[in-house]
Picture 1 (cartoon, rainbow, N blue to C red):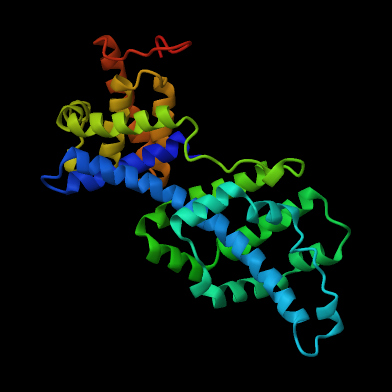
Picture 2 (cartoon, rainbow, N blue to C red; picture 1 turned 180 degrees about the horizontal axis):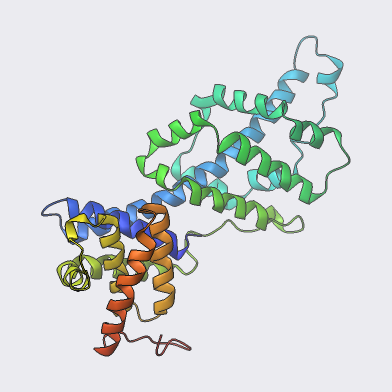
Length: 316
């Protein structure tokens, strides 16, 4: 599922696009934001489908070997350990995944040569050889070889990355987060549950997360000037034009959370935006953002503008 941090990053990216589109309507910006979130889950389904495609290719390769006019002894009696991998079998037959793949019309047929090269490289790896020729694998072993396939031969494949980028420019910003979702899905599968279990949902709580995204985007956009004035008032010996635009936007979003999102502790808000700045801004941003937000938060509390609701949140 998409974490709150990932949701904040998507809102940040949407706000950047909205602010740079002069005259853009708020509803249009919000629609593009929702589209970008949907595309994250699309990438998740595409990557799961890729695992099943490699599995299907492995099965076809064995069938083609047996169907040869003069098959070798190895082709007649192949090692079927990989195609019988319980995790892959569960995934390939998963009704949820089948439904998602059909809805998105995902088809890897035009990339069959790439799938062949990926599987060939995978077969030649020491990890694959150890799995195929070692002791009878446990379910944990079967999961482990899927991690190996996914992380070393799919995620790191530059040709696949190019294909995904061609399908959607939005996906390149989400690759790492989606990779984590795929690994988590495989980790959560159980051998004694039909089809392994359920796929990871897009949201932890769809209603709450959608409301969070909507409120954060709208409130930050509509109060842009007010929040900028708050930030500028706390700058000492700093020219606003010299500050990274990412830092300014992250602080505006944090202020918006302080004031408008009553269910999130201010400490959580502070920590989240500081962590986001580490990845998306300058090395010194975390200290700068922390210092400015501390001052703004203290003032907002004095003015009674920070009102947190819920158990353990009052005063936070």
